Amino acid sequence: MTEKFPFHVIPKLGALGIAGGTIKGYGCPGLSITTSAITIAEVARVDASCSTFILVHSSLAMLTIALCGSEEQKQKYLPSLAKFSTVACWALTEPDYGSDASSLQTTATKVEGGWILKGQKRWIGNSTFADLLVIFARNTTTDQINGYIVKKDAPGLTVTKIENKIGLRIVQNGDIVMKSVFVPDEDRLPGVNSFQDTNKVLAVSRVMVAWQPIGISMGVYDMCHRYLKERKQFGAPLAAFQINQQKLVHMLGNVQAMVLVGWRICKLYEKGTMTPGHASLAKSWISLKARETVAIGRELLGGNGILSDFLVAKAMGDLEPIYTYEGTYDINSLVTGREITGLASFKPAVLSKRSRL
Ligand SMILES: Cc1cc2nc3c(=O)[nH]c(=O)nc-3n(C[C@H](O)[C@H](O)[C@H](O)COP(=O)(O)OP(=O)(O)OC[C@H]3O[C@@H](n4cnc5c(N)ncnc54)[C@H](O)[C@@H]3O)c2cc1C
Image 1 (cartoon, rainbow, N blue to C red):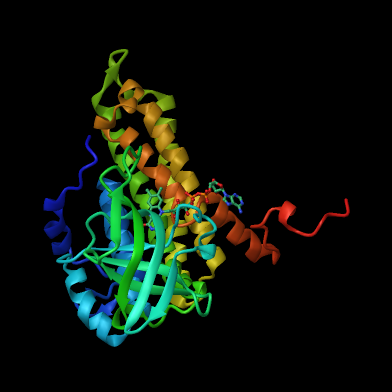
Image 2 (image 1 turned 60 degrees about the vertical axis):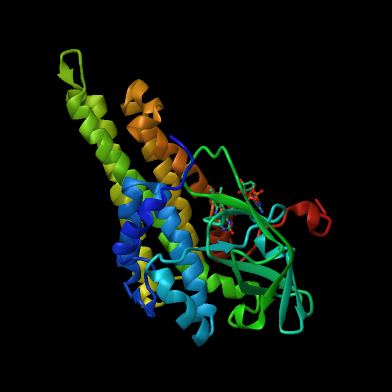
């Protein structure tokens, strides 16, 4: 399987009418968060890379414009993004600031009529071909994080594809370098004035990301269920052996539990009572359960479970970046841990005041 993006699929994804998800107006579907999450899961059930392509474009880039953009920016950019006539990416992570993204070092300096952006971004999905790049940078006057819409042909902007990923292989992740990229005032997102403002977007996108491992696990379950009925050993279909049935039931139980956690987090969001700890717990726990589920699926396929052609091995690879992005399992655990204990433990003891023990 190659790492090429299937551009011919974009109009078909546009026809699904799901880009923009929960955004109301501006040509977007205005779905409930539950419906939007289920659409992501159903796409991931077939191909996780496609769901990531949609998620980055819709739940990160479009949502940032919808929640933090001016009225003019929303009218100008969202309608074509909703149809996938244009594609967007969302750039927060930097080579030296992944989990510690709030310390990012890309700078934005005010100049006449606009801003000069300097710095680097890493891992940015869709960035090699995106028409619009939503970029976060540190305002050199306020030292706070601001957001900008950068056009793909902006002078000083270069994007290099990251090769040889073991998962989400058709998602085009890029290293972005900005050497004095000029962004006009009209393309600064007025609603991003600190890192906290990105959390409004991450609250929704983390829920969406939590549904990707659910979709992947459903797809692996589908595949294994079919395979066990078709393949025979010892004169009987693999599905006839008790141990295999137990494994299938284990997978189904996991899927049901994941769906319920995903459902609950959507309902909390709809009620307006979802906290960052809730979203982080859902994302981390679901991705952990999905890892267990696809590993069982892989062993059920025997040797064919090693071949990406049978999709289960591919799903295992696809799950790994999802386990890591949108906050790794560990970082999301720490967000929940902080909420339930009232104590933040992101920084190691060596950076804290000397222990008296
Ligand atoms: C395929 C893919 C797509 C991505 N797409 C995007 C995108 O579109 N836009 C974007 O902005 N970013 C994107 N990312 C970046 C992603 O969000 C980061 O990879 C992620 O936040 C982790 O950062 P890191 O890779 O630098 O790992 P690091 O931060 O270096 O972490 C390495 C390990 O250390 C652990 N760790 C770090 N800090 C702590 C701590 N305080 N306590 C305990 N453990 C800790 C982590 O959990 C992890 O296990 C993508 C990443 C991948 C792999």
